[in-house]
Length: 352
Image (tube, rainbow, N blue to C red; front, top):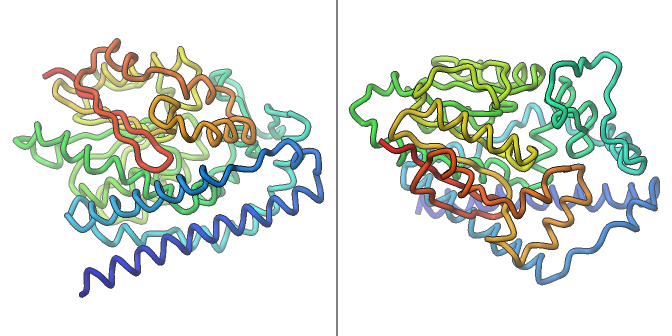
């Protein structure tokens, strides 16, 4: 009975987040239609059969999430983890930022940065207003709004999809069972605001965690989030993933969440090769990113919608890119693929 009640509570909690995200999108669409009618005319409605398929996938990923927690892959408390403080603090700012996003979208202004933002020294592909975000990934405001914006985008399932890395991560680390947990090193490449590192800390409380990101603003946000967690603070470093500043064969596991669709092809390959270099023999590298046409052709409409509605200049190529081939070219083997809701997972191993 307690398990049934907990599961029902979890499902209700997630459906509430889903309905909230839907309500936000409807209200946002209506307001945008009033302020920028030409943008609304470019938006194609999602076919009913696609909506039904999305709901089916959503229900499936919730069941998987519940089962993983129930089986002890991570604490059940993670199922109800939500940044309420950030929600009440920053949700009004999401609305205030929306007109700026719509104006930027209408003008096709994709490289719009405030004068105080220093864009020198970053790769050219990074100097973008991804998702039409104000100042891209280079401001504290962007870092404060990011997790909330992504939760709304995915109907409250962003963390649910992030948690799908935890089971294969723990499975991949079994080859290092003779190593003391505190000596196990895990790197989150492009760690952003630290949400994934927080989830890993809950599932693996003793391992040594590392995170890199290009954005100092997002690293500040990650440090703010992770410093609230008891125990050893993850080591965060500003770095370009194409030149990871670590020794060869240093990490027992690496992961990257929602990065590769925002990279040009040449950068995807170089980052994979860097990840191979710093992974220990026998170690695991897990990529979590968007679905692709090869695994989800029935959702092609959604992928086209995402590409055209949000500024994602490299996404179209990503949807047809063969990441398995890229991983194997770098030296990884035994690449397993999983698909959960709107995300795809590549679980690759470095030969022992």
